[in-house]
Amino acid sequence: MNLQLTTRHVTVSSQVQARVEDRIRKLERYYDGIINAEVVLGKNNSPAEEKTVEARLDVYQKRLTATGEAGNHEDAAKECADQLRRQLEKYKAQLRRKDQDAHR
Image 1: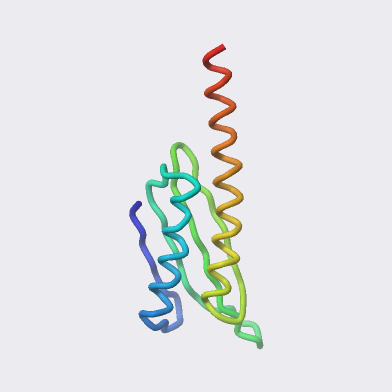
Image 2: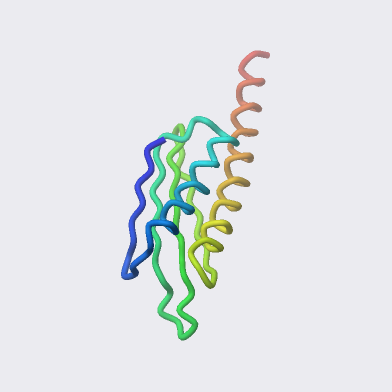
């Protein structure tokens, strides 16, 4: 999987970047056909200044997207990864159904 990590209007330590990358790379456990992943770390301009993580995964003929907001980037990445995990499981189930229908 190609992984591109970008920061937007915020400075993030290399440790935080490594943890976010690790969390996104673990999604390959659920579906190994991920072609490309783009992750954007940023912050919300609200008074609480919550941290945001936006992720886009390219899989076969589809793009999956998710966003997460939390007090820090690690928690936002966890929320984002959980959303993507559910989407990947649903997508994988759809592929299996189509494959079964093709063999009947």
